[in-house]
Structure formats: structure tokens, C-alpha cells
Amino acid sequence: MYSPVTIANYFIKKHSEDDKLTPMKLIKLTYIAYGWYLVLSDGEKLVNEKPQAWDLGPVMPSLYHNLKQYGGDKVTNPVINERTKTEVISDDDAYFLDFIWSRYGGYNGVELSAITHTKGTPWTEVYPKGTNLIIPDELIEKHYKDIMSQALETA
Image (tube, rainbow, N blue to C red; front, side):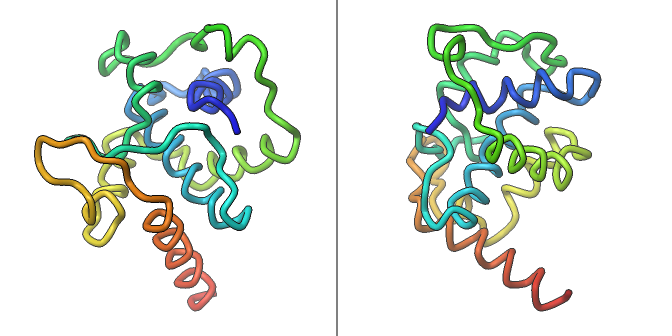
């Protein structure tokens, strides 16, 4: 498992030219990657932190706190801390993160937030206004399995 910051740094390093690379976009991409990883790896976790349901949707708290200095501006540099200095993303996981980017990287943070706020998403199932609760992995995994099943049915 990686730090959520390590996942965000992967996107920052690889896609620094993206003018829409805001904290919100990185937070939502990391959450979406977390969900897809649960499904595609048969329940294994991508990151070592559980997402929480906040006012603005699913959030990995440590990632939020590391990126909040940017406000709504573009994130220009990777976050450096003791863990991110030593964590290296495996080739398989890099391939997976490239898949996530190919599917969701064209969206901005507000659009990704809307995707994670759609009726029936894990966030809508858990969030009571003003309370930050952990979103259970079971809900997240079921949600992304449902998306995969719908995609396979229409293919």
C-alpha cells in the first residue's frame, strides 16, 4: 500500500502540463483509483488510508492536508515528505494509474467531484452533513463493481 500523497505525486510528475491539476482533481483521482483498485485487485488496497465522506465528497485526509496550500490553483510540484521520498510505485501499479488517468484525467476537479456525488455513490450512502465518516471499503468496491458490470453489459 502507498501513501495517498505518493499516488497524487505520480499524477503530478506525469501530468504536470495539465492546467486542471488542482488539489480537488488529485483528491478525486486518488479516491477513484482506490475504488477501481479494490475491484481489479480482488479487495487489495492501493493506499494505506481509508477515504472519508466530507462536504466536498470523498477525501483522503492526509492528501487534503498536504495539498490545501494550493487552494483551487494548479498543483505545480510533488509533495515531499519522508514517506514519499522512499515510496516507489511498481510497474503494474503505474500501468493501473495510467489507466485511471486515461479514463478520468480529462475531467477537472469539479467534474470529478460531481461523478463521486452522483446519487447512489458510496459518498451519498454515508455522508451526513457536517460529519466526516469513513466510507466502508465494501460500499466502494460494490459501487465500482456495479460500474464495471454496467460497462460490460453495454459493450
